[in-house]
Length: 223
Image (tube, rainbow, N blue to C red; front, side, top):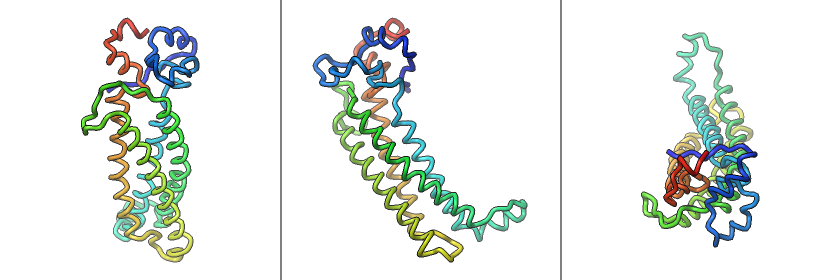
């Protein structure tokens, strides 16, 4: 597995001259003076970090709502262990994590599009599922927006259940809501595969992959 190269600010100017991966005929070469060795204006891609943060928030939100929905089965165990856990507490965690997920998702998608605009994939590569780089980026970008809209829709749906439809009920969420959440787990996982291919197979914003594809010796090219 390849990892982006972490470089100090002092080392970048010299390395830009020695290990640049931008094709001379690429429009992005016009920005070469302010892009680092990973073809970004900063050391490491931000989008992957925000992606995993978004996924973590969403998984926790749905998982805790499932725990709240199944509380009548679990409460005997909690009482036996003398744990002061309430059903409302599970649903509180579910709601606030989903709300945070909806907010963070906007930054996740924005960072993804910004970094995708600066992407220079390795030419002549086809992914394991038969897609080329531009096809993969297009599907990943459109899919990211679709998932953002789905998360927003689920947040609105969850809010109506919490504050209106099921406000006076012990179980704050509908079973259909939980099933849709589990289905979205699968969709996010499949969509994430496209992002992994952009990095792992097309070398997007990964200097080491770009250098290897050009036949460079990493022991010579990298400090």
